[in-house]
Image 1 (cartoon, protein in one colour):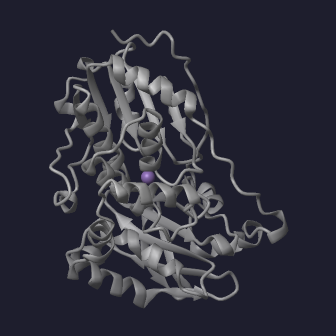
Image 2: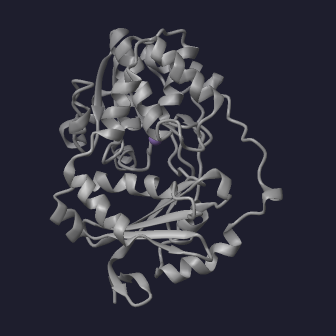
Image 3: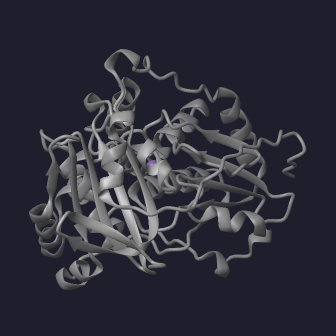
Length: 369
Ligand SMILES: [Mn+2]
């Protein structure tokens, strides 16, 4: 029987402000404060050692018979990879495992895995001994947490900063590249040799969250893990093709609009563009197609950092910020001033409103006006 009495509760706190009026000019005016001097840059990050947490997690999984895994809303390949890998591992050890998510399993990943994500309303949450949430635990799992009975053991595995949720076992450190990297380290500490499907799932997450090993979160450890996963049979080329190359015409059309409108602010080095809801509809594109616009634009040599503003369902405007390590810009500082958050080199925020074009550039008009 799984008892959580041995687990120490951990708690974190943080506050997110929620009032903002945004226009590009305001962001530009903040840049001088956000560009760090080379000399003040941090030394290499020290990653947290989770040896103790891995042992606790192993205790939890050994003693649970029914486990619910939980993926974040609008699931990306990292949450998919981390959850699928854990599911396969737990099923090998005879556990009954479901994966919960507020959205369906991504269509384009069905060629890699036969899997189903179950909406929490369809689940009997009381029937699980333990719940493990992998990746962006504040995007979906936060709504499930209050519905759990108190004796259910909760485990959080994440690599995002500023997570305010707490659980019985907390494995969160933004210095790691991906939740898939963390799950790999768990399996390694448990002495588990990944099967080919497990290796495939973890390499999927690792490659997606590192932009196929191009982002600043790539460490020697990431490369070691990727190489080991390939030795266990993970098809790196197939994964790369699936997540980075096979873009439909709809996505290319949408990117064309975004690239055509891209404007560089020469003094700040801000490269910005916008995507309206009308663009997405006209191109018959998917919201997911917006994500890679920031990645591609961040590689433009003149750009110090990139802001892509896109209209989303429910009258929201999403700002996606991206930079590259050598520019020494902390885009999460910008996101935070606008009520958002994220990593130093990739962050975002959402504000209620719509996007209009003015003589001075793109402007977000708050909903209340
Ligand atoms: Mn991730």
